Image (tube, rainbow, N blue to C red; front, side, top):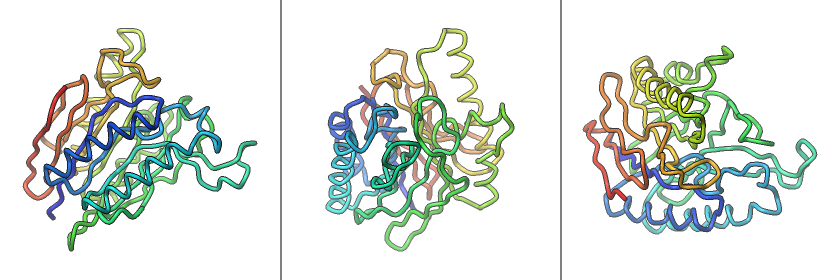
Length: 274
């Protein structure tokens, strides 16, 4: 199967208009490098401020996604966008209007929305978000090629072991996906020892889950803090491509990083570094 999946480790701010410009620049890189689908970090369009994401504040996010869909249609680029999102905006959910989710939004090369995978194991940063269904699979298409992927957001991969909830990686492995995608916006402002423990666990978990599931695991994190600050520490979750028996590529922690994975050749490459 010939599918070239690009990844954009980009800073995520609290301003959807600023985030749109960062994603647009990554899209230009993707088109110039023949990428079929480009993945961005968790909440990379909306910014990771779930409490303030409401029917009154979601318009900039929706406008950005619409413009990105138009870009996809014109440039034959698929996108896998991390964003907060509101559905059912005319209905009350938990005393507010709209069903809020933290999701990966899949857009094909014709600019069509083809699927959504919502964060299953929500945390305190996900105030008001509804948990997604486990094990949702999306089929990426490129001409006559089809590529079946599973996807998870942040805690879905690394945070559910403590309370004994379902291992979503195993669920995807049982469904026969050809790759697992993982987008995060991990905490980077913990006490030094605790932060290091988190960072070590994130990397080890990614490696182990690729090995255990026997499929490639493609990951991306926001290199800035969850509140949109550049704390100079860089990503906590690794951004990279992990095969069952090999770390094919691990991006530098700091700043904007672009890279890609070719599913046909099992090769990877990278773009500009800042």
